[in-house]
Image (tube, rainbow, N blue to C red; front, side):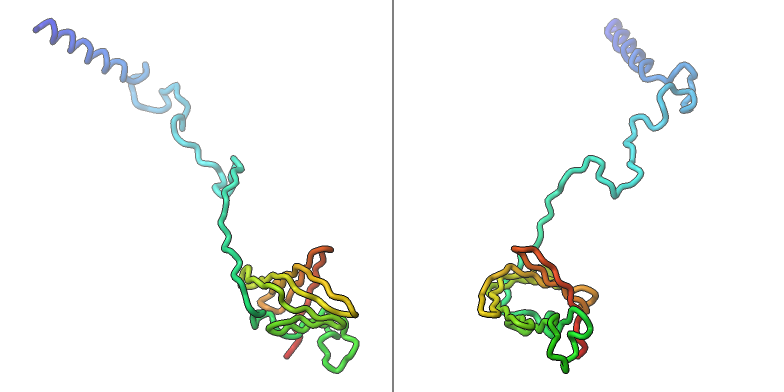
Length: 168
């Protein structure tokens, strides 16, 4: 029994010796051979940068179907200031938007389907007619500058036109 206690005591002392400090006997990091900060997580200098460049999917809200063009998009829109002059009959850059149509100098577009993408963007398939022809185009309307500017984008061919809200 005494021999067993001796073995246990020897093992305990050996374990404590293994956990002891470096030759300096102190607890100062200056006496340590381990570099400072070793074993600690390194914080990147800029936490807004994803250095691993992982792509994280972001779920966007589904566009909501609309039955008419929202009021914020309606009104008279001109490409140049002269387009907004109601006394002129040559305002070729004027676009008038109502709840159910877009009217241009020589053509009209009615809603085929319409969706609200964001509070400032709608998109849809519009049916155009003018000068004896008819066609369909995917079209988006985006409000900018607190509703003072409207961008109309179309596909096939890709085009974008910028309009300014005409004074009431």
